[in-house]
Amino acid sequence: MKDRILGKYIARNHCDGVLTDKELQVIRQGDVDKMVETFLDMGNDYYKAQMQCMLKSLGSSMSGDIELDHIDYEREYKGQFIGCQVMDGDIDVFLGVAGNSKELLRLASAYAQEELEEFDEDAYDALCELINIMNGAYATRLCNEDIDVTLHPPVFYRNTEVTADNGLYVVTFAMGDNLFKILMVADDKIRLSA
Image (cartoon, rainbow, N blue to C red; front, side, top):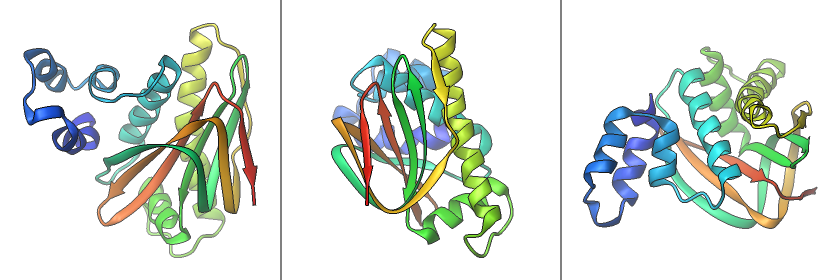
């Protein structure tokens, strides 16, 4: 599960292509938390934990092959179609799934483990459930660390721009020939605009 999502990303992006003994041990263990800490530069502990929860959730709930393609840190992101969920409380958190309707329909089909032919209520429900799983895992982790947050229901927007005061991570995944993006903001204010 873990190697499937992170393996090629690590191979493509690791400096010099030479792994230390410690790095090899982390890969062999396959612990997502340690792999994120070792191989992904996530800026702060909130983002590390958010990435860890998101990767574990994708790995355990997706039936198809899914791979981390690349990670960008952007000031803003404009997307054709964005499903998202917000948490607020001690910190503000945003998690979004973005792509065009074809890309997100493929993601919904993979999650639902059935071929969905149009972006209807079933596809919408599948993506909402996937977002809930990823963000719910992060909310649980925050609460276990005595950080109180309230998880709000997922919502969807078309042709929307997401802006964060300090920027956001745009994490691109490949699922066969299909790409989709996960947008992550932790401990920062976000704005959505058409």
